[in-house]
Length: 413
Ligand code: RNT
Ligand code: ZN
Image (tube, rainbow, N blue to C red; front, side, top):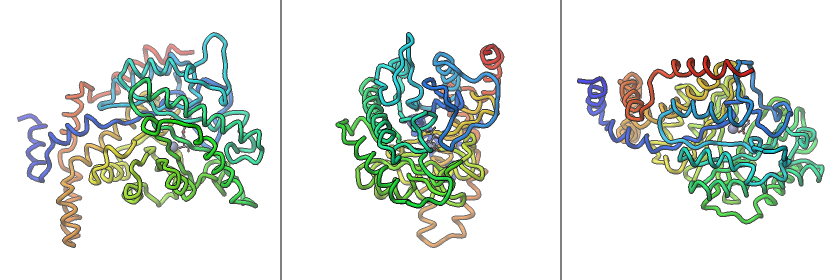
């Protein structure tokens, strides 16, 4: 009997249907961030990465043009099982023949190549206005700036991005998630905490006042507790973004690197799911701070996946990855992190969730602990390998990554 067939039997004894799990997983979409491929640099400006986010490392071979980024993304995609979307930032606009448009003036046509790329692969596109790495970020501020010229510039950027997001949805036939995150904040104790938040609120109102089809574009708002250089205060705090989302019919987005280190997103999901039709996630791995390490198959990633699965919310949670490691092979980083999101979802789908709930409701915490521990060493790997086999994706991906490194990445100057 094959290892999968044995695993299937063992899971059956635990009350778990592995076939149902595999069938569900193959239809779950994960939105893959494009910015792992070039250390969040983009194509529209020569500015260094700013906004309190940082890539560290100098691994050779990063993509420096649209053609390279697309080729690398393709390579990574070929090693990832399951359905995918591509998640772009506005800074990845593609200008041709010497033309250029600043962020307040970008148009759908500057993303036509990405649309062609996505359509050829049957993928949808998610989108992000880029409120960092740009000279109009003044004193670290964008939509909350007291300088009207700065604030107006970034409002126009937000509006331009909504139009582009709608174009993506129309072209691909798949709704676009457009996530707003601003880096605004202060390094040290502010003299006014409400003023910047009031201006951010006004800016969001102005951006969202343009008409757009809410069944095609889901605007999400991402919170953050602190960043490098904005340690004392961030304008887009959790309370601000949640309140704004709820009051204005947006979708809240939680990045699991954006909370105090002992807070966990896995515990927040059920609460948000009770009050929101949709919830969005940036799955990342913070080590001691919002360090954006490659996602691993670790406890919190599994716990997040369990909350999505056992609350029957696979079609209500927009799952996206958000990390950037420049110290290792970037294709490997991409594939490892995204595969781990799928792996965690499979792990969650292989839990006897009804049984676990029943044990809890019966107050039987003893057996709940014992069963949860037993499940950790159930033959999960055999079911995962079966998923890869059915998806036509190799279990060993480092061989393909090394081959690509030799033939493509090392040839880059
Ligand atoms: C920053 C946020 C944000 C960015 C990307 C590049 O802390 O997590 O989502 O990482 O938009
Ligand atoms: Zn994020």
